[in-house]
Length: 193
Image 1 (tube, rainbow, N blue to C red):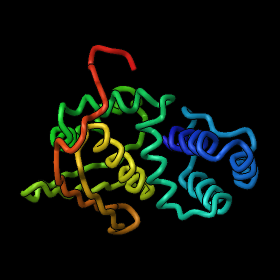
Image 2 (image 1 turned 180 degrees about the vertical axis):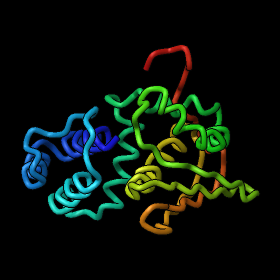
Image 3 (image 1 turned 60 degrees about the vertical axis):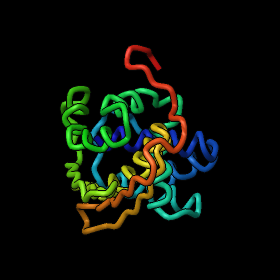
Image 4 (image 1 turned 120 degrees about the vertical axis):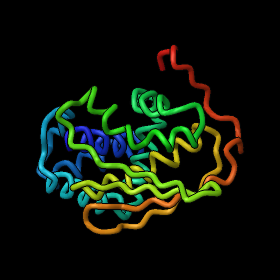
């Protein structure tokens, strides 16, 4: 799974900041040719590359990971990610309730992927708690960006806060303020793109 994560991070840096910072970060991480999305990489490889990206861009890892989550939903080159996520429902609330099924949906396309466990608790009055448990704590902050992008995609006004519970879990607290705050992005299950 880290191959996909590493390739997405590589694409994010290149598209957002240009090829020069990417080339320097790849060289510093000992991967001058870049990362192959379907290869298996160790977690320490991801952490090393992320640290080099952080140093190169002068930004904290949590901010880069959140931006990466937004990027994989909104970038035209990653439209399959958005489509997969939109299969979760016609509203942001339905999407949230489908998150626990997301690892199994992803496993249909990537049977060997090591995916996080997601547990959603409805706290009532538009408040939710999502626990993202994984051996890769970085995925929780990636999920923060994904959730923010998906709220925009559905046109929902949502506040989201993230806190690291431990090395293997991130707790995301969501408050759905207005499900119809703005017009969502058009989406048709039968259309490509």
